Length: 111
Length: 116
Image (cartoon, rainbow over all chains, first blue to last red; front, side, top):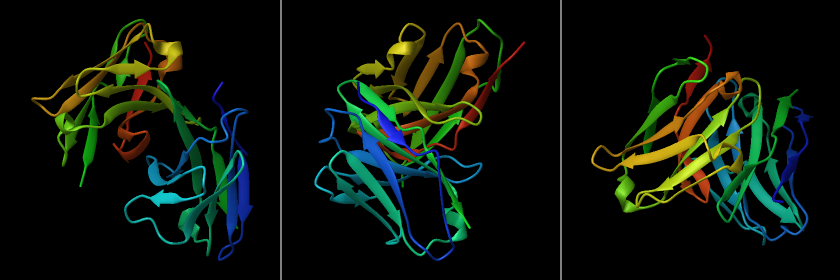
């Protein structure tokens, strides 16, 4: 079964960096995923696609502070030089044959 | 720039049918991609409902398959969602989005409350 696992919460200080993790279920470690940001009271915004080789393709206007990477079944979103507006929920998503799956989301708090 | 806008009733009675439309501008649905519906119950995460190709091919989440209909009107460049026999558990913000395996453009969302 295709499942994505995310930690419910994360926190980091203003100006620091944070690395969020999305883990693919067993047998699906070659899958690409996408990352989304959802600021409070707003709709989701596409950030980037992260491929199994670690390459990523960002959405329009996404700052260089946002980057993607991977290790095995884990896919990462790194946000550097944290700003207050980065405080948001972050979701990962992947796809299979006739199915789309979202992770449970990580709530990022900027201290 | 691709723009999507959801519209439809904000309140639906239990056991009735929820109906939403997504108007697309800046891109012709007939040109390609899949077009999707995603929902988010209050305080919860995102749940994909289903997707449609302009040709009419659709696929949706197994848990809603018997209650969901997704259709397209290429003449109006819009697509629609119907969910039948709704309950309070269907209360959510409903988003439409363009799908290229991932969802690159989203509507602002429409809150639908199921209540008598």
